[in-house]
Image 1 (tube, one colour):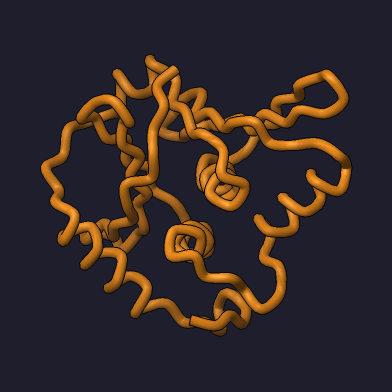
Image 2 (cartoon, helix red, strand yellow; image 1 turned 180 degrees about the vertical axis):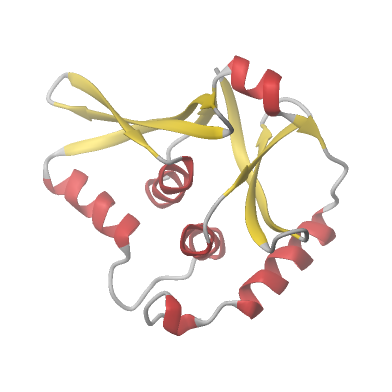
Length: 160
């Protein structure tokens, strides 16, 4: 398993689809995962520390897990089949660990909220990771541009 961090969000210019970039903590490879706009919004809000006025889906998930006296321990981007990434959310409860199948975008949004590590399976990183030379200013500009284009009415009301 390779620990990664969310290094940014970008917009695929060819089809205007958001892409989350997961970068190795101890390396140079980046795993790009194409995601939906609502999930990109949830990830962007977590990265920017923006709290929604009312709980969003990922906030609700975190609250429910905590309310059940459990905790998320990690998430893993575990597989790639037919150009679709798969993830697992690992939840610890009463001396047992359950892994829950989930979309990577939802897993990442949850991980950012509950502050747990994100991992990528070695074979997934080997087959789909790349090295990108993107400086911090380019990432920040792409994220700013994406956030500016969002229509808040599409995602619920929140304060910026």
